[in-house]
Image (cartoon, rainbow, N blue to C red):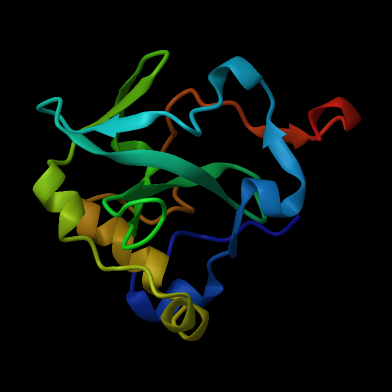
Length: 156
């Protein structure tokens, strides 16, 4: 196993392992009761931000790194996507996930454009900096969200 260090500069971001949506790689959260997908995200003041649609994990350590949150729009039209580092989570309830940034801070997050992200390996590195966190390969511990496990046939 190769251990990669935290990128110190944006130019080093190309050396960071890639991210995948949990469901795209046929993985699931090991304890289904602790799966936060589908829960509403609220800011530190309790204001709605959006709904967690996906969890992104790094392909090396298999740890959840980001929540993909959808907000706005109607029936999927006009919805915006934001990626919020797991480190932003301050509290998890049965229906909600609270984060430290404000709704306005999340709204100003660099927007996700799949074409841009494919060309720019520094996109997620920049998101960590935007939210004020260290790079996502750092030894910093994430909140107690279980590591993904192989999906069982009954989960499909």
